[in-house]
Image (tube, rainbow, N blue to C red; front, side, top):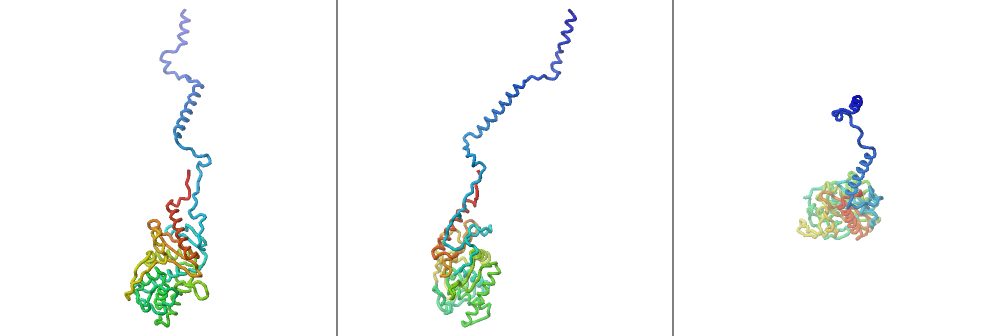
Length: 344
């Protein structure tokens, strides 16, 4: 019997060998597959829970871009030419024939004003000669009335006085031509207008030219000055940057201005809608038979962000309607943060 017992003992491992020997395969292949299926199921449940109560977009809108139309898209205005210019960002927000050259009418007086400011100091005394009152339109000035140049300029720009600008051009032009006396006023004005054209070229107004200081139509039926909407926007930009006080009077509905002769003049703005434009910084109207209705304005829809709007070749009332429409569209664009698209 011993031989059998020894064989059995040799077949069985020692007790401690059960813990030291390598483990044998305990989990079957079928069990592993079951574990994998369970893990996948748990992931799916987690995803469904995360998406619970979250609206699902149609497949064709996922990762798509919806372009928001510009407020200016499809806009129709009466003006032949117009531009909306963002000065700080140097960006054109809207334009219609921006380089079309048309008569400027009294927008001319902006260039006349800065040219005169280069030639004579604010304290200069300007006397209204009787000849100066022959210009078209009566703004209420008196013959031989004496004015402080800066106050006369404020009055002239606010009411668009042709008499006032003729007086200013004559006196300032005399400095250029070294002339004195009423018999030489024509010579001094010619010198003044020549200086206006030189200045226009020096500041890059390539489409702008002047034939007189007021912008009134001349005898051949043409305009007293010509320019484009883009040029007028840049002229106003240049004026605000270099002569910030010159156009201040054009932002008031009405103001009272006294001459050195102690005559008090009511200056009623030729733009009756300046109070409807937020942050108004400047306004200048123009109208003649040749030009139609013109208007240029600058306003701040946001702090220190001037926007310039130029409207040329509209009608007498249309220039105001066109400008207010462009102001409204500009505010719409800025209020939405100039957002061009929204990504889903």
